[in-house]
Length: 156
Ligand code: DQA
Image (cartoon, rainbow, N blue to C red; front, side, top):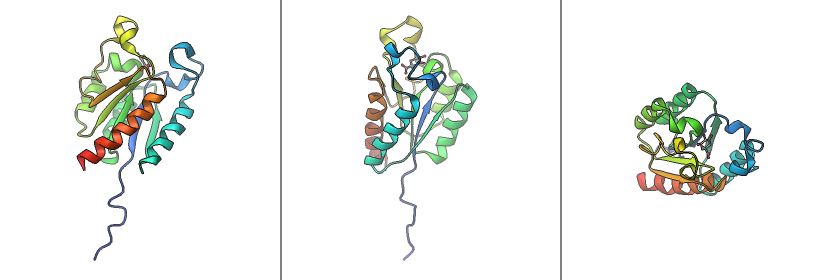
């Protein structure tokens, strides 16, 4: 009988972060907390591991790069957790890329954009997201991983 090898190994969750999230820790800590993005990456990877899952954790200040990574997740990822940061509120390119992704999508924000300036109340990501988690600081990433683990199992 042929060995299944790595065939049954789940693909990683793509955890993608948009502009200026590289400055977490020092950027407006009263809004975003003091945890750095590198720390969030470690915490998120550890939580994924408890579900037997791996993550690809990336950040870019460039819209096109985020689009490229969302497209990459079409074949190399099991789903996308996205904090699109400011592009959440402006990017039709990211919206289109997400629409072409037939995988679970969880939108995450450290802050609660609905309790902030009106220009943050519109999200193009929400229109195509499976679910949205906001206002829980870095805990939101961990909740997103837990939810993604369930969504992936439901899909399998
Ligand atoms: C954010 C909220 C966005 O409105 C903002 O532009 C960000 C961060 C958050 O995680 O709270 O850069 O996505």
